[in-house]
Amino acid sequence: MDFEFSGEQDQLRDTVRRFLSERAPTTYVRSMLDDPLGTTREVWQGLAALGVTGLLVPERHGGAGRGMTDMGVVLEELGRAVHPGPFLSSAVGAASALVAVAGPDGDELLPRIADGSAVATVALHDEGRRATWRTPTTVASNGALSGTKAFVPDAAGADVILVTAATGDGIGLFAVEADAPGVVIIPSETPDGTRKVATVELGAVAARRIGSGDATPALAGVVDRLLIAHVVDGVGAASTALELAVEYTKERKQFDRLIGSFQAVQHLCAEMLQALELGRAGAYYALWAADAADPAELHRAATMAKAWAGDAFFKIGADAIQVFGGIGYTWEHDIHLAYKRLLSLQHVLGGTADHLEELATIAIHP
Image (cartoon, rainbow, N blue to C red; front, side, top):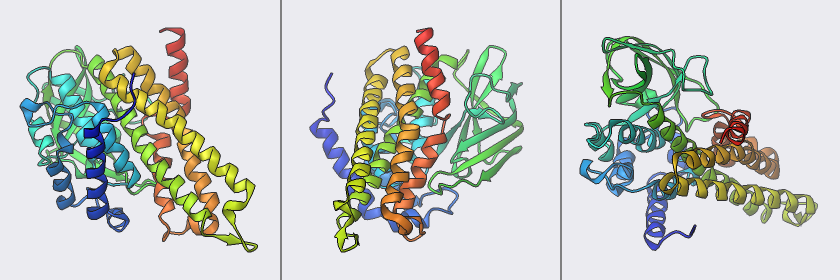
């Protein structure tokens, strides 16, 4: 097993990093915090021009047909830049769901996701069921959906919402136009302005079913991919938090000494680095599992990565704030952007307790 990135992947990393530095710096991130879509059309089309919005889309549908390892390179850079917008929801979540559920023939929405002309998201969780998606209360009947989906990422800026619903043959996946009659999208306030979330109410909304039969096994793999994607994004954000903190220790003086010379600060930074590298190892292994392992190992790897990163990466952000002291809490300083991104990671798709419990279940019933 080789965890070294290829030359082509290193070039992809450099290209994405340069694009984000030039087209979406911190000033851009701040300007998007109150924007419903979380991105400008120019930046979104710029990402599409790089080909990254279609990395997971098969070539016959206009994409690159690549795997999660390549996508991980992009996601880590997006996390490092604390990039806002619906990339993870559309290019990872929706693309993966359509490929997994639609089958070999694919779906008509895939080319639009690949070229950036459409933004899509996946509505997995129902109201009151944050940590589970397998028992939806949203119901499909006669081609219409009724129910309430909660914690839907980037719903307010999406063109299409992929909704899971109970059917007569298990769980079905349905495509719903965001502006269709009967769709009510209610944005939710969250501490992290770079991650948009909403409640989506569906009142007998016309919907198009994706694929046929019970989509539960296919969706299980999609959920694992989303877990991995969020963790890899967190690797990038945690790296930024650590880098900013270490640089500050080389500049800030107290009692006529650089604070980096204080043993307590050194220990804190060392612990942050240790937590980051352990989380990075878990994230990279999970990326490999998504491309090369069987579904059981993918699920174990994704669950393990999120179980560690949820709290460990949040602590990196919190410890970075401690290094900065009072200035870290101010709106003007960039460290709080990374901190809030890691705070949202702690809760997305279930908390640490949920994933530790799932790991225990896997150990008992492998």
